[in-house]
Length: 193
Image (cartoon, rainbow, N blue to C red; front, side, top):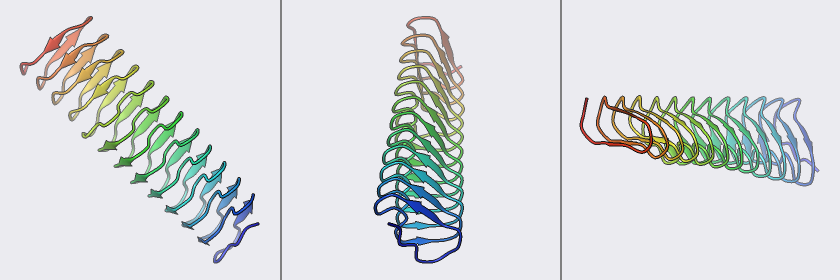
Protein backbone atom coordinates (compact mmCIF):
# COMPACT_ATOMS: atom_id res chain seq x y z
CA UNK A 1 0.00 0.00 0.00
CA UNK A 2 1.33 3.40 -0.94
CA UNK A 3 1.46 6.45 1.30
CA UNK A 4 2.09 9.31 -1.09
CA UNK A 5 2.51 12.55 0.76
CA UNK A 6 2.64 15.40 -1.76
CA UNK A 7 2.31 15.67 -5.51
CA UNK A 8 0.03 14.55 -8.31
CA UNK A 9 0.00 11.58 -10.67
CA UNK A 10 2.15 9.32 -8.49
CA UNK A 11 1.59 5.54 -8.77
CA UNK A 12 2.82 2.87 -6.35
CA UNK A 13 2.18 -0.88 -6.42
CA UNK A 14 3.69 -3.29 -3.92
CA UNK A 15 4.07 -3.55 -0.18
CA UNK A 16 5.54 -0.36 1.32
CA UNK A 17 6.24 1.11 -2.14
CA UNK A 18 6.07 4.84 -2.76
CA UNK A 19 6.37 5.93 0.86
CA UNK A 20 7.41 9.52 1.62
CA UNK A 21 7.29 10.89 -1.91
CA UNK A 22 7.48 14.59 -2.70
CA UNK A 23 6.97 15.33 -6.39
CA UNK A 24 4.81 14.53 -9.37
CA UNK A 25 4.35 11.59 -11.74
CA UNK A 26 6.63 9.13 -9.97
CA UNK A 27 6.02 5.41 -10.56
CA UNK A 28 7.12 2.70 -8.10
CA UNK A 29 6.50 -1.01 -8.54
CA UNK A 30 7.80 -3.67 -6.18
CA UNK A 31 8.03 -4.23 -2.46
CA UNK A 32 9.60 -1.14 -0.90
CA UNK A 33 10.33 0.48 -4.27
CA UNK A 34 10.38 4.25 -4.72
CA UNK A 35 10.41 5.23 -1.06
CA UNK A 36 11.82 8.55 0.20
CA UNK A 37 11.81 10.24 -3.20
CA UNK A 38 12.03 13.99 -3.81
CA UNK A 39 11.61 14.72 -7.52
CA UNK A 40 9.47 14.22 -10.58
CA UNK A 41 9.06 11.56 -13.28
CA UNK A 42 11.13 8.88 -11.51
CA UNK A 43 10.47 5.20 -12.31
CA UNK A 44 11.52 2.40 -9.96
CA UNK A 45 10.78 -1.27 -10.58
CA UNK A 46 12.00 -4.07 -8.34
CA UNK A 47 12.23 -4.86 -4.66
CA UNK A 48 13.65 -1.82 -2.83
CA UNK A 49 14.60 -0.14 -6.15
CA UNK A 50 14.77 3.65 -6.35
CA UNK A 51 14.81 4.36 -2.64
CA UNK A 52 16.26 7.57 -1.20
CA UNK A 53 16.31 9.50 -4.47
CA UNK A 54 16.72 13.28 -4.75
CA UNK A 55 16.30 14.15 -8.42
CA UNK A 56 14.07 13.77 -11.44
CA UNK A 57 13.78 11.50 -14.47
CA UNK A 58 15.73 8.63 -12.90
CA UNK A 59 14.89 5.11 -14.14
CA UNK A 60 15.79 1.96 -12.21
CA UNK A 61 14.89 -1.69 -12.62
CA UNK A 62 16.20 -4.55 -10.49
CA UNK A 63 16.48 -5.50 -6.86
CA UNK A 64 17.96 -2.54 -4.92
CA UNK A 65 18.82 -0.79 -8.22
CA UNK A 66 19.12 2.99 -8.15
CA UNK A 67 19.15 3.43 -4.39
CA UNK A 68 20.66 6.50 -2.73
CA UNK A 69 20.80 8.67 -5.86
CA UNK A 70 21.31 12.43 -5.92
CA UNK A 71 20.95 13.74 -9.45
CA UNK A 72 18.77 13.76 -12.53
CA UNK A 73 18.41 11.43 -15.51
CA UNK A 74 20.33 8.46 -14.10
CA UNK A 75 19.64 4.88 -15.26
CA UNK A 76 20.29 1.66 -13.31
CA UNK A 77 19.27 -1.66 -14.84
CA UNK A 78 19.93 -4.99 -13.04
CA UNK A 79 20.28 -5.94 -9.40
CA UNK A 80 22.16 -3.26 -7.48
CA UNK A 81 23.02 -1.23 -10.58
CA UNK A 82 23.29 2.56 -10.32
CA UNK A 83 23.15 2.75 -6.52
CA UNK A 84 24.93 5.32 -4.35
CA UNK A 85 25.29 7.81 -7.21
CA UNK A 86 25.91 11.55 -6.93
CA UNK A 87 25.57 13.41 -10.23
CA UNK A 88 23.42 13.50 -13.37
CA UNK A 89 23.19 11.38 -16.54
CA UNK A 90 24.97 8.24 -15.34
CA UNK A 91 23.94 4.93 -16.94
CA UNK A 92 24.57 1.48 -15.48
CA UNK A 93 23.58 -1.85 -17.03
CA UNK A 94 24.60 -5.10 -15.36
CA UNK A 95 24.77 -6.68 -11.94
CA UNK A 96 26.08 -4.01 -9.53
CA UNK A 97 27.35 -1.87 -12.40
CA UNK A 98 27.86 1.85 -11.82
CA UNK A 99 27.68 1.74 -8.02
CA UNK A 100 29.31 4.31 -5.75
CA UNK A 101 29.80 6.94 -8.47
CA UNK A 102 30.53 10.66 -8.07
CA UNK A 103 30.35 12.49 -11.40
CA UNK A 104 28.22 12.91 -14.46
CA UNK A 105 27.70 11.19 -17.80
CA UNK A 106 29.45 7.94 -16.89
CA UNK A 107 28.44 4.71 -18.67
CA UNK A 108 28.98 1.25 -17.16
CA UNK A 109 27.98 -1.98 -18.93
CA UNK A 110 28.77 -5.38 -17.44
CA UNK A 111 28.76 -7.02 -14.02
CA UNK A 112 30.50 -4.74 -11.51
CA UNK A 113 31.66 -2.39 -14.29
CA UNK A 114 32.28 1.28 -13.53
CA UNK A 115 32.03 0.98 -9.75
CA UNK A 116 33.61 3.33 -7.20
CA UNK A 117 34.29 6.00 -9.84
CA UNK A 118 35.12 9.65 -9.18
CA UNK A 119 35.03 11.55 -12.46
CA UNK A 120 32.88 12.29 -15.48
CA UNK A 121 32.42 11.09 -19.06
CA UNK A 122 33.93 7.66 -18.39
CA UNK A 123 33.00 4.49 -20.31
CA UNK A 124 33.43 1.01 -18.81
CA UNK A 125 32.38 -2.08 -20.77
CA UNK A 126 33.06 -5.60 -19.50
CA UNK A 127 32.99 -7.48 -16.21
CA UNK A 128 34.86 -5.42 -13.59
CA UNK A 129 35.95 -2.88 -16.26
CA UNK A 130 36.69 0.69 -15.18
CA UNK A 131 36.42 0.07 -11.44
CA UNK A 132 37.90 2.59 -8.96
CA UNK A 133 38.70 5.11 -11.72
CA UNK A 134 39.54 8.58 -10.37
CA UNK A 135 39.76 10.52 -13.65
CA UNK A 136 37.54 11.84 -16.42
CA UNK A 137 37.14 11.07 -20.13
CA UNK A 138 38.41 7.49 -19.87
CA UNK A 139 37.55 4.34 -21.85
CA UNK A 140 37.94 0.88 -20.28
CA UNK A 141 36.84 -2.05 -22.46
CA UNK A 142 37.41 -5.68 -21.52
CA UNK A 143 37.26 -7.79 -18.39
CA UNK A 144 39.01 -5.87 -15.59
CA UNK A 145 40.36 -3.26 -18.05
CA UNK A 146 41.14 0.08 -16.38
CA UNK A 147 41.97 3.50 -17.77
CA UNK A 148 42.81 5.60 -14.73
CA UNK A 149 44.13 8.93 -16.00
CA UNK A 150 42.52 11.77 -17.94
CA UNK A 151 41.76 10.87 -21.57
CA UNK A 152 43.27 7.37 -21.21
CA UNK A 153 42.12 4.24 -23.09
CA UNK A 154 42.50 0.61 -21.96
CA UNK A 155 41.24 -2.19 -24.21
CA UNK A 156 41.73 -5.88 -23.43
CA UNK A 157 41.49 -8.23 -20.48
CA UNK A 158 43.38 -6.65 -17.59
CA UNK A 159 44.75 -3.80 -19.73
CA UNK A 160 45.78 -0.72 -17.76
CA UNK A 161 46.30 2.86 -18.98
CA UNK A 162 47.56 4.90 -16.03
CA UNK A 163 49.19 7.85 -17.83
CA UNK A 164 47.40 10.97 -19.06
CA UNK A 165 46.36 10.46 -22.70
CA UNK A 166 47.85 6.95 -22.70
CA UNK A 167 46.55 3.95 -24.61
CA UNK A 168 46.89 0.29 -23.69
CA UNK A 169 45.58 -2.32 -26.14
CA UNK A 170 46.09 -6.01 -25.44
CA UNK A 171 45.73 -8.54 -22.67
CA UNK A 172 47.68 -7.51 -19.59
CA UNK A 173 49.32 -4.40 -21.04
CA UNK A 174 50.29 -1.73 -18.52
CA UNK A 175 51.02 1.85 -19.65
CA UNK A 176 52.10 4.26 -16.90
CA UNK A 177 53.68 7.07 -18.95
CA UNK A 178 51.77 10.12 -20.13
CA UNK A 179 51.11 10.30 -23.88
CA UNK A 180 52.39 6.72 -24.28
CA UNK A 181 50.96 3.56 -25.78
CA UNK A 182 51.40 -0.20 -25.95
CA UNK A 183 49.90 -2.74 -28.33
CA UNK A 184 50.23 -6.51 -27.95
CA UNK A 185 50.43 -8.96 -25.09
CA UNK A 186 51.75 -8.19 -22.43
CA UNK A 187 53.86 -5.05 -22.44
CA UNK A 188 54.78 -2.49 -19.77
CA UNK A 189 55.55 1.13 -20.65
CA UNK A 190 56.71 3.52 -17.92
CA UNK A 191 58.20 6.49 -19.84
CA UNK A 192 56.29 9.46 -21.17
CA UNK A 193 55.89 9.91 -24.94
